[in-house]
Length: 482
Image (cartoon, rainbow, N blue to C red):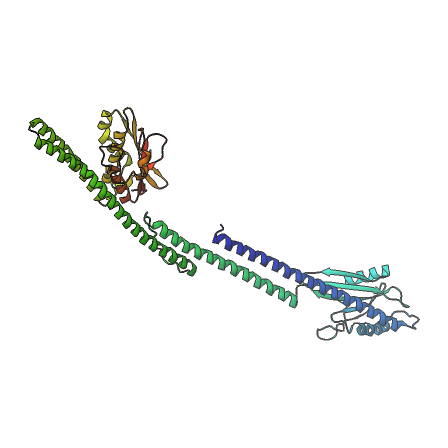
């Protein structure tokens, strides 16, 4: 799934491509407009040259020819003026190879007064194009493109009594001036501002949404490691706040459902506990009653003594049962503090080393090589590990091994007690942590229930870990470094 960032970036990329295409079309349109202006200017100078040729033919008709003097030159000027009067922006004249310019006129000149002097800057170009037309006997055109305009000069041969005479016209076509160029600059400026504004706006949206999403992520990350959803703060963005409200409402409903489920589970557990407790108490009471009745009915003092011993054993069994029951139901709130895992594990197994040795078992601890100091209630956790170690000692045959390990994995602190015994009976696996569930006839079935309650008090869980041989119990706690 693509993120909002990638989608907005793709949108900005599409805007950039669209802007580049629009800019290209604007420039291309302007270039075509410039080419069209140049083409119109070419038509204008060609038509002007033809007009000069037509009027020159009328002027020399019936004329036998005479030496060229100033009077003839003055007579030719009106010919050029009348021919170019209807061609705005076109100047021209009549040229002869031997004498140069015979006549020049610029009737549409917009300056002050008529322009009568041949333009000196273009004289070489005028001479060249007239020479080309005179030598080839055909019209000739030349174009000189500059930065802001294109100079177009056209020449055409003239027939008549004068030899080597040509007419020429000249104009300039603007390429980077005028309304079209102004429109181009305006369009490109608007386009650049639009793209820049879009980029800034999209960057602001990305930064704003990223900041607001970071607020939600921080609220979720700062929440305690519980099953309940945290109360998320509003971000100020309407769409995100709708999502925040939905998450908060879902969290409230989830918490309410969890409370109801917990209450129902607690009632069910109380019912099972009461039934199992009644069963566990009834058996010792029945045994004590039977022994007491036999002792009263028998005159043998030895038999009465054995009956009292049996009654005391059943009383001890009831006392252990009640002690474990109180330990399970009255688990106090943990008091976490900094704990050295290596020292903690060594102290825990040393308590059981003598019992393990008498049972012919090896007992060892495994701790992380470079573990940080963890934070938990060491008294409660040692009590939980004591129950798991005692269970392992009681269920592991002689010659076996028990390993008590701690490790840090995926920001979880794991305590693991693994033995090489026969494993757990498949019939009680699903109910293993329930009270009064045990695979030993002399067990109360409360040890694992106490382990589970201690783990839950630390916001963790106790579980049976999958192993190929033996049995492995795990206590998983949220990692809280000291």
